[in-house]
Amino acid sequence: MAMRHTWSAFMLGVALVAPARGQMLAESPILDDRHLDVVARTPGEAERIRAILAPPVRFDAPETFEDLPAGAATARARNTADAFSQPSANMPFAHEMDFRLGNSLFRKTWVAAPASTLASDGLGPLYNARACQDCHVKDGRGHPPADADDRRVSMLLRLSVPGGPVPAGIADWHATRPDPIYGTQLQDFAAHGLLPEGQMQVTWTEVPVGLADGTVVRLRQPDYAINNPGYGSLSHHLMMSPRVAPQMIGLGLLEAIPAADILAAEDPDDADGNGISGRAQVVMSRVHGVPMLGRFGLKAGNATVLEQSAEAFSGDMGLSTPLLPAPHGECSPSQAACLGAPDGQEPGIRDGLEVDAVSLDLVTHYARNLAVPARRNLEDPQVLRGKAVFHDLGCAACHRPKHVTHRLRDRPEHSFQLIWPYTDLLLHDMGPGLADDRPEGRADGREWRTPPLWGIGLTRAVSGHTQFLHDGRARSLLEAVLWHGGEALPARDGVVALPKDDRDALVTFLESL
Image 1 (cartoon, one colour):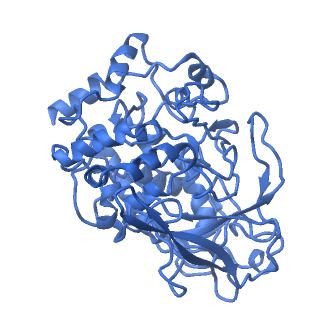
Image 2: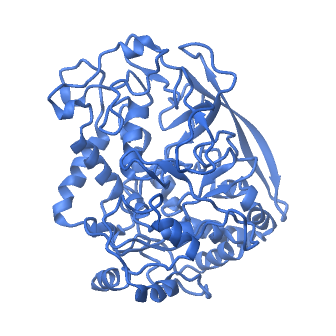
Image 3: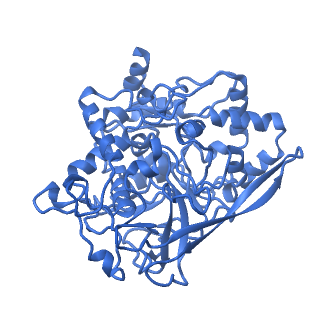
C-alpha cells in the first residue's frame, strides 16, 4: 500500500499540457473548473504526465498501476452484488460518516405527503421511483422492462419539443423545451388519487448481423411509445429518448478530470483525419450561473455530481432541493390536480425543503465516492490479446483509457489520481442505429457522451443482467459493439471482420475492466 500512496502523492499531481486551443477554452470564464478547489500545477510536471498518459506500445504485460483503475481510491474487487457499493479506499476517517449517511439517504424510501414521517414525506405527486436505490439497484445499471407487466423502475423516457430559449454564451445550442403537459420526462407512477402520466411501451424487432466467420448475431431493435397518457393528448412534435439508470461508480473522479484535458481531445472538424470528431457538451450551471463543461448524464447534460443529484431528486421522485425548489417536482400548469396535491415542505424545517442542503450534499458525497473495483485477470494472455485488439481497432480514440485528476484541496479521495475510466467525456456521432433524434443542449439526435467502461465486466454480478447501451437494448458486450455507427463505424466493422479468437479476446478484455 505504501507504493500506491507514494504514486498518488508524487506522480499524480501532474497535469497533461493541453494544446493551445483546449488550454484557452479551459481558462476562459466559460469552461473553467470553478466547481473544484484546485491547486495550480507547475509547468515542469507536464512532461512526466505526458509520458504516463501515452498509449502503450507493448501488450505482453499490464501497464504500471493498471490494476488500480481509480488510483488510491480503488476498492478491492468483489464478484458479488456489493462490488459497486464500497467507499473510496483512500477516504479519510473524517469523511466515512458522511458516506454512510449519504448511503442511508440514497436508500431511503420516500412517501407521499402528508405523513407522520416528516423527514421522509414529499414524494411525487408524479414520480418514477421512491428511492435512488430503486433505479440504481446496488449502485449498478438499470434495464428495460422484461415484459408489459414489468415495472418501469430503472428506465424512463426523456421528453421535449422543439423551440425554447438559447442560453447566452453557448454556441451550437439546439433549442428545445419541456413538453407543455408532460415536462422533461414521463412519470409512470402517481400518489393516491392522481393519474400517472402514462406508461412506456417497448416493442422489439430482431435484426440479424452476419460476422466474417459466418456467425450470426441477432440484435434487438426497440420501438418506444406511450400508452394511456393521463393528462391530454401527446404533442405531434414530441421527442422521446429512453434512458436506463447508469452505474454510479467513479463519479467524483470523473468530476475531477481537468476541463483542459477533456477539451484538448476535441476535434469537431476532424482535423487529424482519423474519423473521430468529439465535441464538448456545454451546459448552464445552476450553481454557478455560467456555462460549464457537461460531464454527467448520457448526453453529458449536467456539469457536476451535485446538479445531477438534484435533477434526479426533482425529476425522478418529485422532491424539492435548493437547486430545484419546486415542491411538486415536474408538475406542469396543465396538471392542476398534481399542483394542488399536498407536498412535504415544512417551513422552518430542513430549509423548508423536502431535501435540504445538508441532505443533498451528503447524497452527492456518497455518489462521488462509490469506488471503482480493482481490475481482474490483467496478466491473462487472453486479456492482453484483447487489449491489443481494442487499441488496434481504434476503440481507445473515444474510450480514452487514462486520465489524471486535478490536485484538490478539499477532496483527498479524488486528488492526484491516475485513473482508467475508458472515456473522453465528449459527444460523438454514433450513427442512425443508436440515434434517439432528440437533441439535448449541444448534442444532436445522433450524439452521445462516451460512457466510461470501468466496472463493465461486473454488471452481471451487481445488476443481475448483461444489458448495455443507453436503453439496454444490447444483451451482451458484443451486441453493444455491433450497434456502434457513425464515428465508431470503422471500429465496429473491424470487429465484424475479426477472427473468432480475436473477437473472443476483445470481449474477455472488456469483461476484465
